Image (cartoon, rainbow, N blue to C red; front, side, top):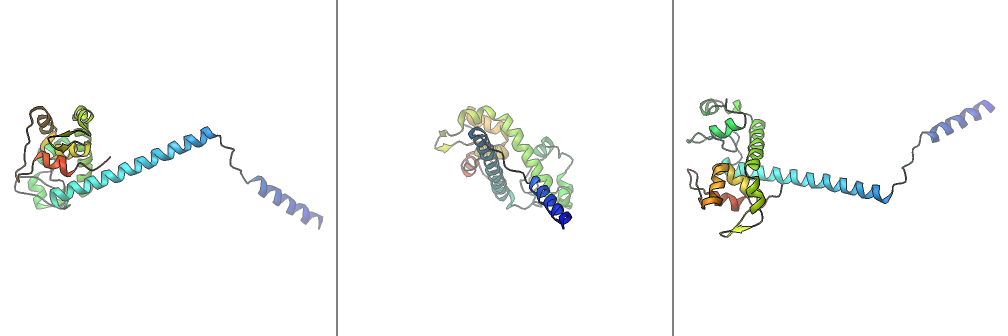
Length: 189
């Protein structure tokens, strides 16, 4: 009987010794935790906004169809031309091969190319984004998302010409750079 009580006592002591208690956190540590959680929440919101932006651009370009192509040689859900594909590391994807078999350029690869293009365009346009973001020009509110969408339509050079000379290039269907500045201005990523 004594052995049994001793054994139970050892088990109870062992069990309680394994329980860890939360440390007493200082206000400074709590503030650091809150800041970290806010950063994570902000990053999640930016990621969600980027995904909405990509969906909107894809829908505008091809109704979101990764197998789409047009007579001007643009392919995929974002309607990439050869130079855009090449600048993003997908220059090996030819229009003819894609027409025959759209699976030669997967939807995941198309998304990767779009992210690369956005990153490149953001770098090329960083001064314009910094200078004009939030400003209204000729009745058009300038935003980072609108600028990046416009760069997808007309290239970063086309966007630069817009700010230098007021040049508003259009694509083969008559969609102008300003149309994209307006249409895609509401995304915050």
